[in-house]
Structure formats: C-alpha cells, structure tokens
Amino acid sequence: MLPEFRNEPFTNFSLPENQAAFRAALTIVKAQLGRTYPLVINGQRIELDKVSESINPARPKEVIGYFAEGDVKSVDQAVAAAAEAFKTWQYVPAEERARYLLRAAAEIRRRKHEFSAVMVLEVGKSWFEADADTAEAIDFLEYYARQMMRIADSSNQLTSYPPEHLALQYIPLGVGAVIPPWNFPCAIPAGLVAAAIVAGNTVVFKPASQSMLCGYIVAEAFWDAGLPPGVLNFVTGPGEVLGARMVEHPKTRFIGFTGSKEVGIEIFNKASVVQPGQIWLKRTILEMGGKDAVLVDETANLEAAAQGIVSGAFGFQGQKCSAGSRAIIVNDVYDHVAGRIVELAKELSIGPTDETNEMDMGPVVDKDAMRKIMDYIEIGTQEGQLLLGGQRLETPEGGYFIPPTIFGDVPGDARIAQEEIFGPVLTLIRARDFDDALAIANSTEYGLTGSLFSQNGARLEQARREFHVGNLYLNRKSTGALVGVHPFGGFNMSGTDSKTGGPDYLLLYTQAKSIAEKL
Ligand code: NDP
Image (cartoon, rainbow, N blue to C red; front, side):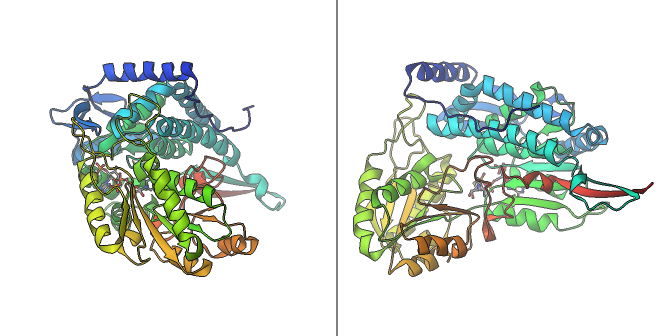
C-alpha cells in the first residue's frame, strides 16, 4: 500500500548545506551546457542537421542546448509510434502504469537540485521559484499515480441490479498531443504527461521553445523509469509547425495544452475540424492566460495585503498565469496601500539568479517577451501614473531584465488593466467601494485566480458567490497553488477549468465504459 499523498517539502535555503548542494547542482548543469539533443521517437534518438538553440535569458550569448528542429514529418512519425504503442499500453494495468510515475518521481527527487538548476539557467527562475517548480513536478506524479489507482475501477459507485454483474471502467482515449508553456517548464509538462500516460494513453510531447532542456529532462525521468518505447515521444521545433500538426493529425485523440489565450483558441478551433480518416471528436484540455485581481477593502490587514500583492505580482517576474497583475483597492485605503506596495517592490533584488539564493527576480524569458512587456509599459504611461520602474535594466551581458513596474490610478477598462502582460507590471486601480472593486475584478474576459483581503465576513461570502474565478483566495496571495490542496484551472478565456492537481483531473484523459453481464 502506498503512503498517503504529501506535498514535496520546499528546500530551506537559509541552511548552508542546502545552498552548497544547490551550487553543486548548478556546477553540474553548467558543465553540460551547449550539448545537442535529439528527437526521441519510439525510444530511438533521432539527430537532425537542423537545430534550434535554447539560451540563458540572463546572458543571451550562453547556449543552454541545441535541439533537433523537427517538422511535420517528425510529428507524423511520433504519432505513428504513439498509436502503435497504444495497442499494448492501454491494457497495462493501472497499478503498473502508476508505478512508472512513482519511479519517475523518485528519479526527479534524487536529482532535484539539478532540475531546479536547469530552470534557473534556462528560464531565469530564482532558486526558490525553481525549487517550488520541481516540487510541483514531483507532486503531480505522486498524486496522479494515487488518483489513477483510485478511479481505475469505479464499479462500486453503481446501483446493484441483480442478476446483472455491473462494471464501470475508465479506459484511455488514445494518442495525446502534450503542448505546455515555458513558465512552469518542469511542473506543467510533468503533470500533463503523467496524467495522460497513467490513464493509459500514449503521448507526443513538444516542449515550449524557450524551455526545451527542461522538457527533455522531464521526458528523460519517464524514460529512465523504464517506460516502454513509443509511450512518450519527444519532439522539438516551432509550435506553429509541430504543435499545429499535432493538433490536426487525424490520429490525435486529445490535446493537453497550457499556454496563451491566442494559441489556446487556435487549438480549440483546429481540433474541432474532423480530418479525413478521423473517427472521433477530439477532446481539448486547454488552460490559458489570466488577468488576475487582488482586492483590498478598508477592513483588511493592509500590511498583509501589500505583501501578498507584491509577492503575487512580481514572483518569477510576473510570468505566472496566476500573477496578481491588478490590485483593486478601495478609495479609503488606496493611498496607504499603494504607497506600501511601492516601498516593498523597491526592496526586491533583480539580476542573474544563478549566483545567489537571495535574488528575488531574474530576467524575463526572451527578447520577444521583453519587447512585448516594454510595449505595454509604453501604453501604461498613457493610461496611468508610473509609480515605479518603467525602464529596462541594462547589464553588461545584455540580459532581459525589467525591474518591478507599477502604474497607479489606472481605469479598470484600460488596456493594461484588461490584457495579460505576463511580466513584472502591476496595475493599481482605485475603486469607490467593495461592490465597485468586485465589479472591476469581474470585468475582464479571464477568470483564473483572484484574491480578496478583507475582515468583513459578509464580503468574504459575497466573494465566494460572485468573484468569478476558478481559484479564489481569501486573505492570501493569488499565486502558489499546491497539488492536491488547490486544484487549479480557470473560467472563461482562462481555459477549460480542468483543475490540475485535483481529484477529477484524470477523468479528462479517459472515457467511461459501462459493462453489464446477465448472469
Ligand atoms: P504560448 O501559447 O505562446 O505557447 C504554449 C505552447 O504552444 C508552446 O509549446 C508553443 O510552442 C505552442 N504553440 C505555439 N503556437 C502553436 C500553434 N499554432 N499550435 C499548437 N501549438 C503552438 O504560451 P507561452 O509558452 O508563452 O506561455 C505563457 C502563457 O501560458 C500565458 O498566457 C500564461 O497565462 C499561460 N499559462 C496558463 C496556465 C494555466 O494553468 N491556466 C499556467 C501557465 C501558463 P513554441 O514555444 O514552440 O512556440
């Protein structure tokens, strides 16, 4: 019997031995930078002449790795391998499939700091953020392994009907396309892949182009766990080519995607078109962007609110779907809270994150992200009052650093109050009162996370009813969902509300078969 699920503890970096262990892992990873990585299809490593680079956003000249640049043919090969492997993998008992996840989890735990070190170098996470990402990857594997064992046979939920012998089995769907983003570059791919394969499906996995090494080491943990060839196939290359083909392929049965609203909508549309030879309607599990709000009323613990806002807005440079990028504060306490937010944000340190555990913020992920964020900052100067930041931080090595940037007195319908910026830009909005604040919070097309800081019980109740978000947090920040504790996923243009890390998630990767035998 398995021990009960427990979240993987975070590393305490105030202990010198943990700092030393993390530095040692960084040294190991740095010694391996610049290697070339293949596609892996049906267990075969496929090298290609054409490669694309993954770079360190803190030092863009530093190449993390070269990755084979696949094309439509590579996808077709990978889907064919996955379809072949599905013929047998679907019948492997759920408990055995779950054991592969547990072995992969043990492998990631063993190399924990190496996983985190890759994230520090490839996407610019701080030690703390990287460590939390690795812990979440382990959690997904441990949690879904247990959930699969629980749901494998749900016959005991049926009403008895003698003399029939009844069964309700959750069987897999088929070949899945797994298309994750770069911002939780280990946890999200680990979760998407684990859910798909533990449910008995086979997978073609294409990591985001900014985090291909993270994707590779996640896949490697599964392969090292002894997964049969063809169950997990790994391809790299541009999303608009490979991802699009993965979505459109007639043998693809489902798509597990996390990323932007724009790409999510495109996938939703494309997946709805029945291709020649396709004999099912594709299932889409699409988790998308957010414009998450943190509300503060006049009864709130204002210091806790200011701290929660700053940490939720600027953790990992604001590049989280759950980042509280709008702080909506009632007029009575607006000036005080805004002042405190600016003071706290000024204290955040920013720079390359590989030298010390004390760096709060690293670079944004790439040049395109930097341009987009700087464009929004330009728009912000027309729409609100710049209270902090607003300029790039130039470094000798040309890293993509943008310090915490805060705009005050922004109207609720301004672009920087409505559109996902996905960077360290916080918009402060002055509300007349609590009802006004709630209306502003609900006024975007998104509905992912939301926080309310208030000591007023009636308002907390009202928020439970009316604050339309998939993850509502009362008197705490909007980020930091834990597997099994805070099932995660949003409403409206934030996605299909799949609730990753929740008790129902795996059902999305299955179809139920009801069997009755008259005895
Ligand atoms: P993108 O949508 O740009 O990319 C996501 C993935 O889609 C990448 O692997 C990308 O590949 C691929 N892709 C790109 N174009 C296509 C296409 N035409 N067809 C199929 N696949 C394609 O998102 P980001 O990677 O920039 O991630 C950030 C976004 O993710 C933010 O909007 C954030 O809010 C959201 N997110 C949502 C979460 C949630 O749970 N709701 C959690 C985490 C992030 P390539 O990189 O090669 O282009």
